[in-house]
Length: 378
Ligand code: PLP
Image 1 (cartoon, rainbow, N blue to C red):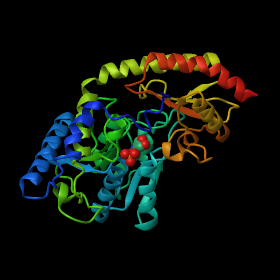
Image 2 (tube, rainbow, N blue to C red):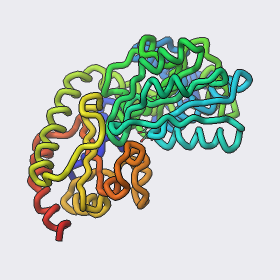
Image 3 (cartoon, protein in one colour):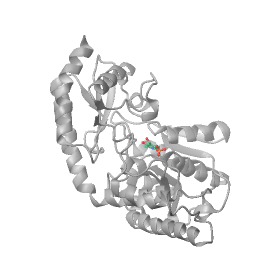
Image 4 (cartoon, protein in one colour):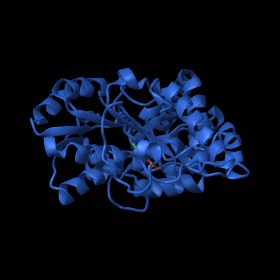
């Protein structure tokens, strides 16, 4: 199969799997136990935390290991909003966020009496800093805007958002699930106060992630239990997952610039092939401020779901955007927010390239396109 859906998930790096295996076997101890088996498990987590902190240029205790991007987003948004509720009940986010953010904010609005401002985006998918400034009130305590959109790859102005929030003493949480491992990150200077990351997006294991939380920023737990993760996230740690994520993060960061250049070249090659097979097609997203690997294309007159099925029949895996929306006939909320007509949103699909994508795969995909479009147009 030609897999072109790396924004949905990525294969586990063999190096990460090898590092995980001992913790799925003989090193099975509970890190909270005081005996030797427990101490070995604790040492593995401490080591992973130190290494992850080094990658992020953070301090080890700023890292809260979680069960993935969704949990990190929920902890970042709900935990920080609740913690600061005495200071104000107004929160700001953006209409094109992932559902892990959108549904967390909707929950706070419906269930906990918070007021939410949903920032619009322009036709490229970016927010305006002027809109952000205009939305902020003395009651605003938290802003959450992602770094890179999972459907279009459009980048948001993270450092500009951070500067505006910092000036006003407002916390800034950023969902970096799609950009981590694709763009360099140094948390101390990036600007946000909290950052969500998910391992399976950068060749780490599924069900593992972290929330980086700037030192000194208090947070309210959203899970209740023991005293793990400096009393911020209870639950016996997923040691194998944490170890695998750390190795995958090290690998991603080591090859970040060469991977970006290679993926950009492959994306341009794919787009050239698409354009010659289907000249009416267009790209959704920002022309330059974007992830190198993501190509969201509208094929006017073609039903997106049928196109995905036909690509699949030819052995090519792409996506209609957010993976969790597959099977739903709803057009993408991201494209609609960018002003794409509903019928065009339903004619749009996302190709996302990864470290394992080869030029041969792109060439083969391009070769198959004319036949697929011929069939669909009939
Ligand atoms: N945020 C973004 C931008 C994503 O793309 C995803 C996954 O698609 C998530 C959050 C959720 O991450 P996870 O699958 O680890 O829960």
